[in-house]
Image 1 (cartoon, rainbow, N blue to C red):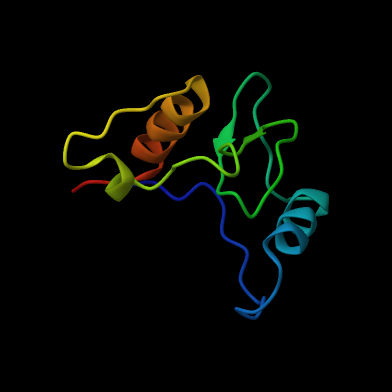
Image 2: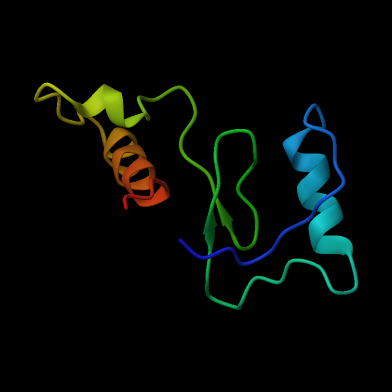
Length: 89
């Protein structure tokens, strides 16, 4: 795993979107290379450089165990999104 950006100082109860807005608005803040995306969780909204899963659809890897398969394009996207966001050692 490689950390791209670290923003210390926020308390744990701060809203995800608020912390993200702060990170990208700083002069030396988080920069997203053009044409690239960071995968984010459903606590964020899709925006330039950020790709969130579909809400209201199965998402977590546990949802796909025991042979369950996606039944809609949105579930398929969420399954791939979830797999990409997980780090294995």
